[in-house]
Amino acid sequence: MNPPDYVEIPPYASLIPEYEETEQSSLKLSPSSLGLSTKQLPLASSSLPASPSNAPLSPRQVPGTPSSTNGIFSNFSSMVVNQALASLPSPLPAQSTQRRNAQLLSAKDPLSIPITSANFRRFIAKCGFVFWLQDRGEEIIMWRRGWKYTSAWMAVYAFLCYYPRLTLLIPHVALLHILVTTYYERYPERNEENDDEDVPVPALVVQPGEGSADWLANVQAIQNLMGTVADLYDFVVPHLSHLTWTTPMTSPIFFFTLFSLFALIPIIGMIPLRPVFLVLGLTPFVLTHPYVLPTLPALIKPFLPKLRTGLRRVVDDDQLLEKHWAAPMKEVAVWENERWNSSTGWSSTNLRVGERKPWTRGQDGWSGTVEGTPFDGHVSSNLSFALPPGWKFVETEDWNVDLVGNWHKVPVDEEGWIYTDDSWLDPRTTPLSSWTNKGMTRRRRWTRRIYKV
Image (cartoon, one colour):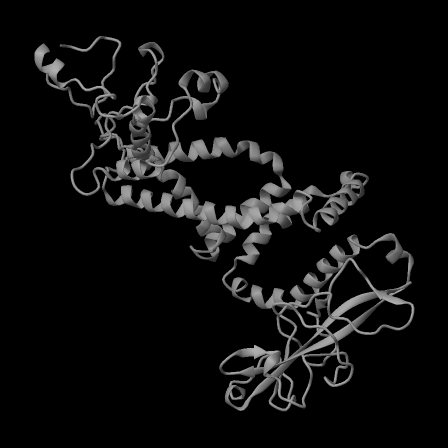
């Protein structure tokens, strides 16, 4: 029996052979006979539309597109889609979904494995230009094609910064470039003798066949792009908590934004936009230069301790109470002492009998024993000592490591430590390898503010 005219059969579908009525009736199965409820039916059946009039059309292969090849790659996209959709919950009813998202492109078709698989195949074959543009941009910014190529693009950007109205001509220049390029491809050696000859028209875009090297390259690029987006998401999302008033950093960010807004309003008309955009646009090229990029960590590292200390002080100041601001404040310090052991590593429990205590007030490591023991290796407010009469510790802040290390002539490491030999002599920023067997020690400074009552 031929299908009705209003039913469109996809090119990859095959007709089921007809059976006699008696055979069909004997082969009919119902969900109840199989012990299944209607809620346990597969996803594809629940996503079918109610009537053919509003049924979504299945994606069709574009004429001229290479057909799928047999082999290991013929069902690659189907396996990927089935694996991704295997654990999805049942979709919402089609009518309620269409009523709520009638104008949204994301809800144009109901969730269906055949449609998703077909669109995934089409997307793999047609997304090559996206990654081509990505690669060309990376080559320009990262200086992958030499200094002349990147410098030429920098010169073009600088020219557009000083003549920004020329950006309106970019679409015309791009279109003319495409037309001129395809003209010479269409007529590579045109002269008076072959003006009337027909030259075959080259294809502007050739879609890769499924399973080909270019097709697999697109799959690899999609895989890496998904990983990059996920990594970027994991990097950004933890910092978004500072914008939700759940961390101490929210208030400084709010007041800084508010202050900078009102500070920019009077002078916004005097800001030279052309030099600003010139500097902002050329800075990435300078930072990614092959000679600059390897030295960036060494250039930034000296400023990181002061930056971290400044940000921490801003957070602590934001938590101060009125009584703290109204009273004189000063800073007190304690020193943490540890010894190395090849079995247990760094710990204050490795200190020998008769030498320095784990916590001391004096820089020499002997005077002013501090009471209290840190919990899990982190200093907490239970570290205390007798203050001068009329002074108290600031209740809203805790002990903080001195990352700047101005208390010693030797620079401290990233965690504020200064390393010495077995006798607490010969201070260095990093320990010597020869100290591992002979013994070595280290110490660092912690600070906290006090205020006068």
